[in-house]
Image (cartoon, rainbow, N blue to C red; front, side, top):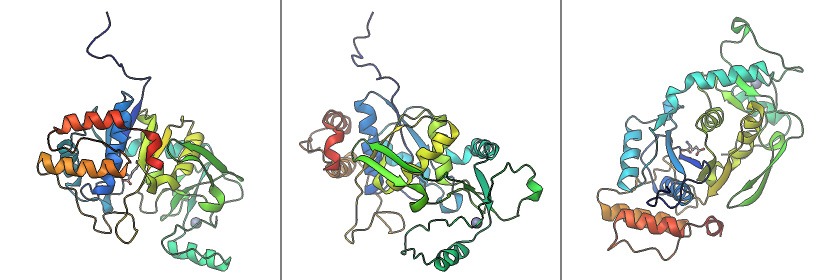
Length: 317
Ligand code: GLU
Ligand code: ZN
């Protein structure tokens, strides 16, 4: 007998997630990512998971994770399943790196930022400030082999992924359309584990999204530039590739992305009126129009209306 209370059962396995770094409380920009990914998941009758990306411990602020959870709940953005913390997934990342070593696709790198900058300068390559340096391959051996004996490895070294030649990756962004990136020209062999032993965002995000069976990644456009290398890493590790949708960034009055570095203000969620006000601003940024003004609606009613109005096509315009 069909369950009449639930006329729309989950679409085939939609699993989305919100993956904040606990470097501070949610601000207007991170709320846009949270709301956009939540609405996309809910409209598709999918699950929405919360993963705290605290892999880069030195950048994390104690208590920011609980504050983020409090803010999400105050906005009615509830998650499914128990939240997870990347700091508890070290073993997974280590195994993935060992697999890559077995596949002869990683190599040790002893370069410092300065030595990379010098190597690039010697080749006449200028790297604009604030832009990532394209690794010139200084430590890449002719033939990559399996590194068996840890004792033979340098004490201070990073692990880099060796890219194959001619690797232009194309993917469809559900909002922005076809995207493409020449990984060798724009990125170079990228780091999977840093010299201080910290696994990088690129490795952690790819491993966790696969382990958690994430099918849809909805996040801010500041991460668009990382997507091609993540898809490549999925290919190498034999994972399937989720769908991607990148949301418009919230910029400050100087045209800079809001971030904790620019001391972006935390959203206000001390009462329902404040939370609704923040949600409405985020929704407007996502292009949602004609939503209840929130004066006579509860957060739950407002979110339901927003879920019905949500439309991937309008956010890119
Ligand atoms: N932790 C990342 C951030 O807060 C987001 C990761 C992702 O959504 O892929 O910028
Ligand atoms: Zn190097």
